[in-house]
Every structure is written in structure tokens, then in C-alpha cells.
Amino acid sequence: MTEILTGKQAFEGLEFIPGTPNCYVKLAKRCMDPNPKNRPTAKSVNFQVGFWIEESQLVSNE
View 1 (cartoon, helix red, strand yellow):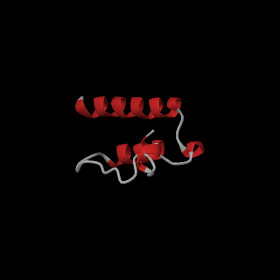
View 2 (tube, helix red, strand yellow):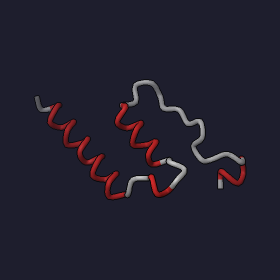
View 3 (tube, helix red, strand yellow):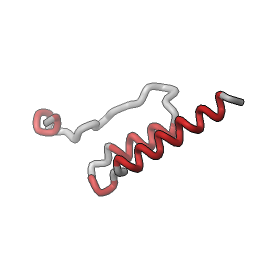
């Protein structure tokens, strides 16, 4: 809908706030790839986010 209204690709020019972890930015950009075949699956995203949560819990317990 956004593309029809504006004539631009969705998320074009989207900027992340300073301090956003690079791993998050990279995954988000992959999710917004104009070619759907290049986007990660929901299962892959779920696995990656689960890994980050697990990793952050290990770090906070140290």
C-alpha cells in the first residue's frame, strides 16, 4: 500500500537509531530486501532472535 501511495519502495531510506546493534540492523535489512526470495524465513528470524535472547542471558549471568 505504501508503495502505491508514495511511488517508493517500502522502507526506502529507513534509518536506525544510533546505538542499534549491528546484528539487528543486518537482520532487519535482510527482512526488508525488495526481493522476497532474499528475505529470511520466519523460522530463521525466530531462531536468530532466540539466540540473541539466550546469549544476552548468558552475558547478564556472568
